[in-house]
Length: 257
Image (tube, rainbow, N blue to C red; front, side, top):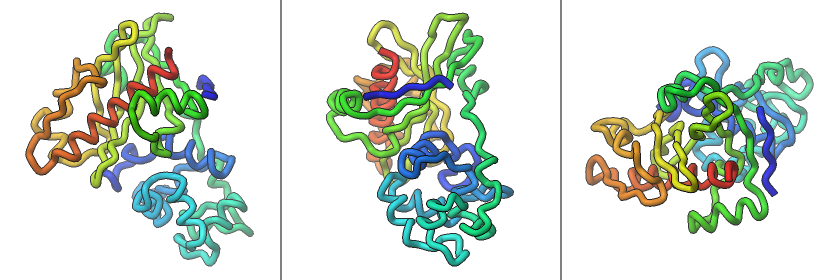
């Protein structure tokens, strides 16, 4: 069943403070966290909890691996903190004094400026949250020919609109490679055919961002990409970007049939 409701890799605020990871946390622990679990409130650097999450694969197993560890050094394991709704990434927040960190959680908003660059004629952007579960998940996995990663199960999508007419849609795409490339990927659609409208790199290896590599995807059908690496040593990373775009397009096709 699919539920829908309207609504530098380890450095920058926009790089990893994206909704799918908060939604993954909520799917496991049944409440939405603040971004400050993984990011320092002032510097926006990753906390020890955030670093552990990304180091251990960015999925449910990463949460599980952290539960027995006192990553913020406050004397309480992360799992016990989360159960008590205190912040596992902040030593000042403990089960006996959790603080108001959860009040910092904000509603999901569309990154309008980035989306406007992909869909210049759009006058609004709608936000959707989806969960790929049951038959919905099976259909996407059949298209891709592989099992979906945990971080792909709770996508956040943006629909570009001109009045009430849909121009296309966008979502986050994360490559599964040693140095992941995180993109905001926009697609136009005619019938069942997709075309890459634009890519905005939120975090990506510098060599993949250089030389027009990401630009080369624009106007292409993500289901029939012939991906060429910008240089020989980046073949795996380049192919992972192509696969991330195919996954994004398959998700959009499932959510917006």
